[in-house]
Image 1: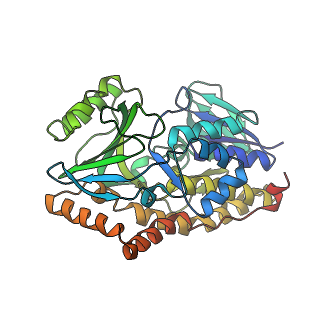
Image 2 (image 1 turned 135 degrees about the vertical axis):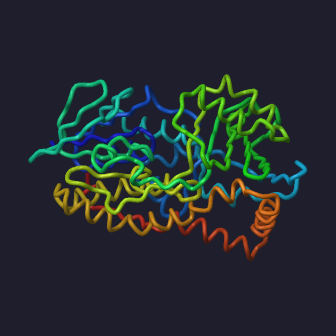
Length: 393
């Protein structure tokens, strides 16, 4: 049986493990974190992507954990309610917290794949019949193929294609997220507040006592690769003088064990495969918020495994066809995600007011249809297709 190493146990990695196992591969998944990552942003699925969830047998589990979000209140510059946006505008056909989705995918794959947590790829050397992989902690191993599904800061991409700086395009904004006590008493609703260059969105999902806090901020000159304590200090400094409920939210930072801080960036490569190594999801085409990256990463996993099965394991042919199918949808996602920072954290008071006017139009029938078309466009950019070799597995 052929072997494949999948780097990354977030969303795209376990999805690849599920489909590659069905394609007849013995799969090992390596993850740098010591365990599954909790929390994270809510991710939604629409149209073609929901067909994929059903085909994987995870849709029912996802629906049991869906956020079921209602309307969002958008505050004006005076911190008073300015308008309400219907929850359906953002949450698609089904929405789930990223951490819940990762857990579901792990549970559906852990019996058919080997998971190694707390380690990562540091070097790759391709031979005539495989790839010799060096790990930070574990002993070197050899695999027939390697899939880099380890995110925007992919170690596989760095080892096979070169340094991150050659492929990452920062969009001028950063994003942070953490969990805080629900002192606002929100119940399946969310609130957005902005000041120039700073955006705060809080929402309560399934767990009534918790708020998920998302912060977006102008980030020119900000250094992101820091220790957790330095990240807490950075977020505190950037939002120190912000009004509304932000000072109270920041009080929860010292106890937050799920803080995430990073730049809003995209990844652009001329090719996603090199020899026996191939990239998937954010490691290959990170689009940023609004780019339907989670759904496309999961669909890309099915295409990758399906093309390998259809090609009888010929990775050169399979990787080329995989990229042929994914390149256009990824480009659409990147186009959608490119303006996310400006939309979530407008740089001036006038731009905030303009963004809010756009929000109001979303609630109208005409512009609501246009907005739905725009959001569905990225989700439906790749048609779900069955691969007979996987269906019969």
